[in-house]
Length: 85
Image 1 (cartoon, rainbow, N blue to C red):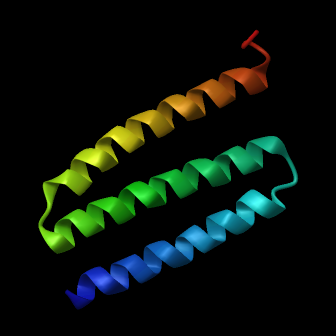
Image 2 (image 1 turned 90 degrees about the horizontal axis):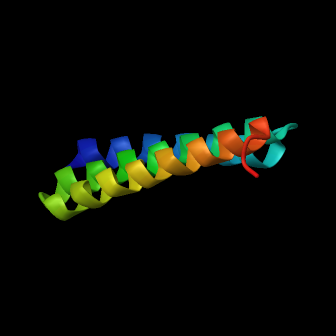
């Protein structure tokens, strides 16, 4: 169980770094990368929780969240290119 705790601490520290990237990013694409990284870390945290508590519902939710995050990133990238009207 301690291995999951240490892994969650590392994911949390990486989350703080990506929040800093989100806040301090000089351009909009830098902020989008920060949000995308934070979404990936949330998915990793949910998978760790699912493995630690032996619950598959967390993993199912993580898969759906990852799919929605990917679609959101594609929409933002399309908007930044000027193609979304």
